[in-house]
Image 1 (spheres, rainbow, N blue to C red):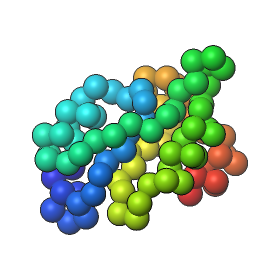
Image 2 (cartoon, rainbow, N blue to C red):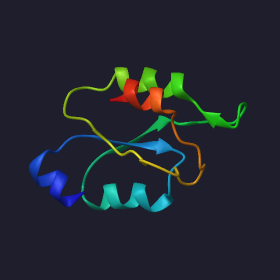
Image 3 (cartoon, rainbow, N blue to C red):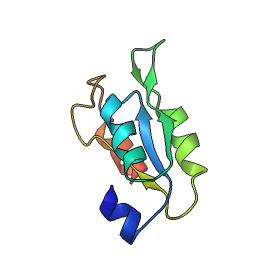
Length: 87
């Protein structure tokens, strides 16, 4: 995060939920941290629509922290088709 602060500073978005230390690491580096929707408690799965709606509103230069597999703490990963759409 210090590298990001020096070389491509911007707001950092992390999934909600994420590991508590992610928030602290971003803040300690002096960056602003925000949370994007990830977990849908009703379906016990990915809130893909919420994630997409949030990401579509982010400005260029925004940093998005992504768990590329075995999302912690939910264990829920996007499908291959969702990954393509996210990219």
